[in-house]
Length: 456
Ligand code: FAD
Image (cartoon, rainbow, N blue to C red; front, side):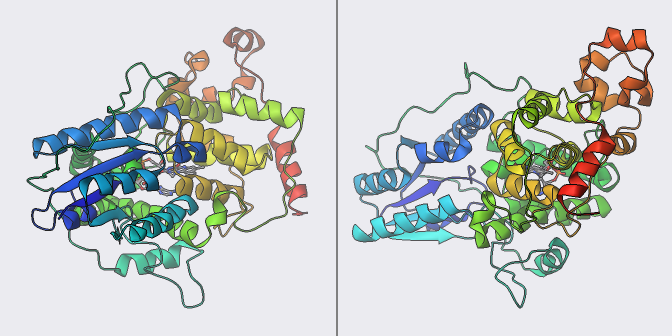
C-alpha cells in the first residue's frame, strides 16, 4: 500500500502529521508539491515568494533524499495532478494539511470528491499550519472570535498535540515523474536583501532566536532600528517551521519575552479563524464603516509616492523602502505605513494590501488582509478610528532616527531625531537633501478622515 502526501504551506519534515500518518510505520509514500497556476493567479506569484519557495523546495528535496526519498514536483491543477500521482503510484490514500481561506477550502472539497470517485481516501490534518486550528475554540454565540483578547485567553488553555520527530527513512516508489525543482538563481524583480528559505534555515533561526533573542522581545519588539523581532514570519508562512513546535519550545523558554512572543503567534491563529469563518474578509470589509475611499489622479499619485517611499514623512518612507529592499517590514513599520495610507491619505486598504502582497516574502492572505483591515478600522480593532501620527510614532519607536538613516540614504547625513522633520532644516540644508516635501499636511489628513467617518 502506498500513500501520497501533498505539501502546500507545510514545507518541512519535522513535526509533520500528514507525513507521519502517511508513513504509518514504513509504508512507501509519494511526497508531492504542485505548482498550481490557480495559486499564482490568486496572488501568490510575487517574485520574492517564488524565490523563497524555490529555496524551501530544494531544502525539502535534500532532506527527503538524505532519508532515501525525494520530492515529486508537478505543475498544473492541484486536484488533477494529485489524482494522477495517486493513480501512477496506485496509492489508496492521500494526506493533506488543513488550511484556512476560500481557495484552500474549495481545493480540499474538489480533491476529496475526485479521489473518492477513484476509490481513494483523503485525510485532512489539523494543527499543521496553525497551533490551534480554526474552529477549535469558539465563543458561545458565534462561529469565531471577533476580538483577540478573549480568543487569546481560550487559545492559551487549549491543549497542543505533541511534537513529532522527522522521519528517519522515506521510501518513494520508482517511476513517478517529477519536474525539475525551481531555482531562485536569475529570478527577476527580487528584493536585494531577501532572506533565504528552507527548513534548515528556519530551524537554525528559530534555535538562535529562542536561545538569545526572545528574552528581550517584550521590551524591544517595537524598536524599529533594533530589529529585535524573530523574523520567523516567512518560515511560518511557508511552514518550514511548525507553529505547534514553536509554541511548545517558546513556552519552555521562560520569561516575559517568550510569553509576549507566544501571544504574537496566537495572533496568527486568530486571523486564520476569522478568515475561515468569514472567507469574504480577504476582499470585503469585515465590518463596514461606509467608507468612500479617495480615488482619482491625486489619490493615485499619493499611493504611488507611498509605495515608492517618497511621501516626505521619513519614518513612513523608511518602512516602505525596507519592504522593497528586503521583502519584509518590521511590524511597527507595517502599522504606521498602513495607518498612513488608509487614514492620513484615506486610500482603500485593499490598495495597500495588494502592494504589500506584491513584495512581502511572508505575504499571507489571512495575516495581511486582516491586519490591513485592523489598521483601516474595518476589521477586528476595537478602536477602529485610531490614527497613528507618523511623527509621534517616529519619536517613540525610532528616537534617535537610526532606522530612517538606514533606509533613506538621502537623509543619512541628518543627525539624531532631526531626521524625522527634514522640513525644519534650514533652506540650504533642505535643498541639498533632494528629499520630497510631505504629500499631505497631517492636520488636513486627519480632518479629512474624521469627516469621512462622521467623527465631528
Ligand atoms: P515577531 O514579532 O517575531 O512575531 C512572531 C510571529 O508571530 C510572526 O512571525 C508572525 O507569524 C506572528 N505575528 C506577529 N504579529 C502578528 C500579527 N499582527 N498578526 C498575525 N501574526 C503575527 N504577517 C505575516 O506573516 N504576513 C503578512 O502578510 C502580514 N501582513 C501584515 C500587514 C500589516 C498592515 C500589518 C500591520 C501586519 C502584518 N503582518 C503580517 C503581521 C506582522 O507584522 C508580521 O507577522 C511580523 O512583522 C513578522 O515579523 P517577525 O516574524 O519578526 O515577527
